[in-house]
Image (cartoon, rainbow, N blue to C red; front, side, top):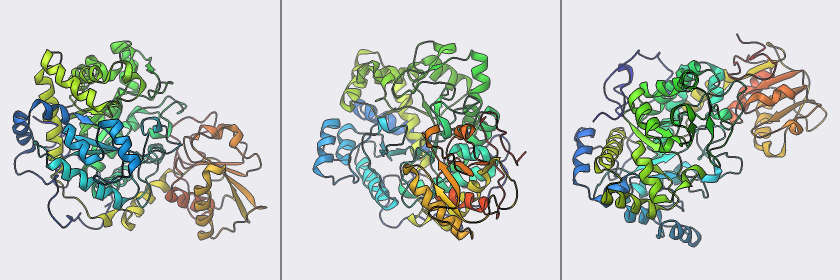
Length: 575
C-alpha cells in the first residue's frame, strides 16, 4: 500500500523516501552540502535497504509476524542510557523500573520493538515533563547509540530497521545541541518568508540527523498560532497566518525528506489556538468547524501533500468534530478527517502516551483505544509491558481487530524500508561549513526591526550587552560577534543592548537599554521602552552573528514578525 503521498519530480531522485510525483515543482534551493552523502564503512546496519519494493516487502513481513511481534512493532518507548548495550547502575535500575531490563538493546529484544525515541531533559524545554532523562550528548555518541539499537533490531524475527525518532525542532525544543548546526526556531523561518531558505536549512538538518542515525524527526510543528502568537506553542510555530505557514511546513518537509529523514507534522489537529498545555490537561480547540478548517488545517494539508511520512496526533479536544474526546483517541479525527478528508496514507503516531490526557485509562486500554482511533505507533507508553499486553489481549478478545493492527504494522514497515533506501551520510556533514552557511542565510533573513533605524549602524560608540543570567551563552556569543564586526564592547558604561528570551517577563527587561532584542516569540517587546527593538526569534550562535551584523550596520534586517506584537508594526523596515 502507498504510505507517503508523493512529491514533485524535482525531489524524486535524491529523495527515495517518496515515490511518484504530484503538484508543482518547488523553486530551486541552495545546496546544503558540497557533495553527495557518503555511506559509512563497515558491515551493513539493520537499516540496509531491502531489495524488494518497500510496500511489498512490508506486507510480506507483516504476514509472517507473530502476535507478539506485531504488538512490538507499534511501540516506541524511550530508554535510559547513552549506549545500547552498556549503561551505568543508575540507568540500569531505571530501565528495570520501566521495562524489566538493564539496557536499551535488551528492551528492544524483550518487547520486539518497532521504534525508540531519543530523549533529552533541559529545564527550559516546554516538553521536559515527558523527558525524564537524557540519552543524547553529541553526534558521535548518538551515532554509536543508534548503530547499537539497529544491531539489536536486526536480531528480531522481523529483522526490520528500527524507527529511531527525536524531537529536533530547533529553537526551544532541541535534543542535540553540541556539535550540530543549530537552525533558528520555526518562527524565525516565518519571519524570513523565504521557503527556499527553509527547505535548504531543513535539508541540512536532515543530513545531520541521518548521519547520527535518526530516521524520524518529530518536526515540523504545523500548528497555527492565534494572532498574538503566545499560548503554549509560541516560537515552535511558523506564525499566525495559515497560508504562510502551509508554505513553510511544506518546505521543511521537503528538506528533511530529501535527506532521507521522515518528517512528522504535529500536533494534529492543531495546538496553536489553545490555551491549555496538553502535557497537563485536555486543551480545547474552540473554533467552529469552518473556522478550524480555515485557521488550523491548511499547514497540515500542505505537509501531507508535500509527502510527510508521519503525522503526530495531539491530545486535544476538537469540540466541533468530536467534543470531549482527545484527538488521539478519536476515530472521527484520526481516521475520518486525517485519512478521509486529508488523504494521509503514512504513519500516524500518538503524542507521548505518558502525558496526562492519555493516562485517563490504564496503559493497555489506552493503547487499544489509540490504535482503534487510527494511530499506527504509540509513543512513550507509561508502562511498556502493560501496553503490549493490552494489545495482545485486544487481539484475543476482539476489541482490537487484527486487520487494524496489521494495517498499522504494514504502514510502519513500509516507511522504515523506504527511509532505509537513502544511504547514511558520514558524520563529517554534521556542523559542516556548508551547513553553517546555509542556515546562517536563513538566520540573517529573519532578523526584524520593530522600532528603530533601518540602515546604517543602530548605535554609535562602545556598547555593553546585558541579559538575564539564563541568557549568558547568547550574551557571550553576541559580544564576540559584535567585536568581530568592529563594534567596541565594554563590560559596563556603553550603550546598553539587552537580550531577552523564552519565558522572560516584564521584570526581565532593562529600562536603561537603548536596544532590546527578543530571541523568542516577540510579544514582550510591546512592553519595552527602548528606542530600538529587534527580534531574532532564536538565541543560536548564527542568529547572534546575524544580529551583530545588523547592529553594526553591515547588514539590513529583512525580517517581518509572523505574529502581532501589541501596537508595534510587524516591521519598521520590511514590507
